[in-house]
Image (tube, rainbow, N blue to C red; front, side, top):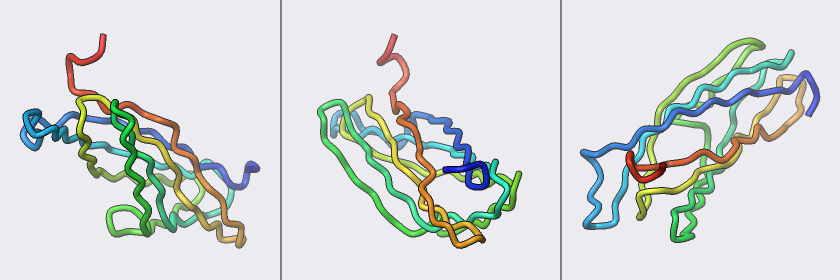
Length: 125
């Protein structure tokens, strides 16, 4: 990836107590993602690929068009923020993945999303 095609991704997560049911092995998390085009070329977020892993090693893979029903076009320096959620069977897990981007110069590239933790408060020291 060169300087024309650079996407910065920040993630904030939150445990959702009201949608979780530990007795049923259901732990709900919200995540808010901020995507910023730090490159010099406009780029459209075409699709997403997530790998969600709980602490038992169970993996869910999610692929789909865009995010939250949108395929945002990010001009250089422009950002896009959205919130979504995930449900796993353990109080701790991880998510990672990538966004598939299409730049206005015709180049397609992946914007990697580094692994981030999903954790019920008090589960980690």
